Each structure stands twice: as structure tokens, then as C-alpha cells.
Image (cartoon, rainbow, N blue to C red; front, side, top):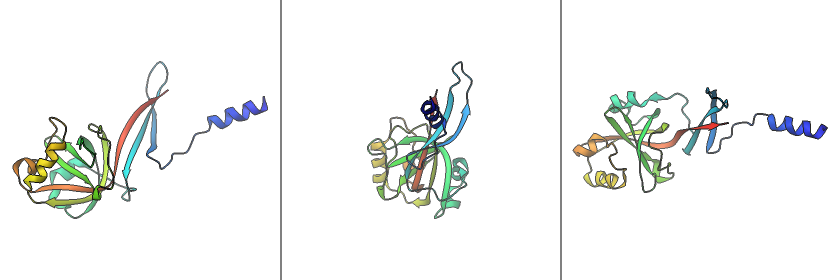
Amino acid sequence: MKYLFLFLFACSQKQPATSTDKTVESQTSTPSAEKSIEVEQWENYGAEFTIEKSIPASQLLASPETYVDQKIKISGTVSDVCQKMGCWMVISEEDKHMRITTKDHKFFVAKDGAGSKCEIEGIVVKKGANKERAEHYASEQSEGAPVPAGEINNTATYEIVAQAIRFQIKEDAK
């Protein structure tokens, strides 16, 4: 009986969050007959984040030129991901879109990440018009996905070269 009590006590202890791919950020109760708990987790890609505070994607998308050559952290929504490798993604707010590329193709994100809330840390860059690059991205995008205006109009575009990306994952734990 004494050993059973120790086992039950040890199993009931809260496990610490780890720095592996999925980190528990917060827990909130959701109403249900079974009292399930909604657990918010983040799936991390690339390097560790170094900037604590993020700005909303809408702020960056409203005036990207003011952030060129700056390292920033933003939070937003993923609207598309490269369907070949996961080496780029697009964030969107209303009718504004920006491409995010992974630094040096050193890491890849989940190809099914469209619709996920995300945080991104990287450098904002301005790229000149490049029809071939735009066609390459078009060959890897999801059907009907939003495309940054510069790629459609063959004009300059703004992108983030990301060192760290994370997607929010919501799972119900019972």
C-alpha cells in the first residue's frame, strides 16, 4: 500500500515544460461534460527565439518598408506553406500577404500549417522583381492560396528571412 501511494503521488506531479518541439505554454479549462482541458502548445522550427516581444503581422504588413533590414518578431496567421519541402510560408491579414523564407533552407515547417497561428523571428528584406522566383513559388503553393502582390505584379516584394518559427497547436486533453 505504501508503494502504491508513492506511485500515485509521483504520477500526479506536474511535468515541467521541455524545450523540445512542443512546449506547453498555457492551460485553460473548457466547458464540457467530461471536463476536458484545452492545451495550447507550440511546435518550434529553426533556432531559439531571442526577441521576447512580438508585433502583430498587421502592423508589419501595413508598412513593411519601415522594417527593412531589422530583426523583428511578429505574430500572425499562416495562409500557405510550400507544398514541396515546407521551406517558405505566407502570412496574411485581410488583403495583405508576405512571404516568409527559412534562413539558408536550414529548416522546414509543417506543410499542413495553413491556418495556424504563428510567431516568426527574422530579418525583413526587400527583394526586387523576379518573375522566375515568383513562378517557382507558384509551382509550390496550395491551390487558391494568397500570393504577395509584388509577385503577381512583378514588382518589389518584402519578405522575412526567418531564423525561428513556431506554430500554435491546440489539442484537447481529457
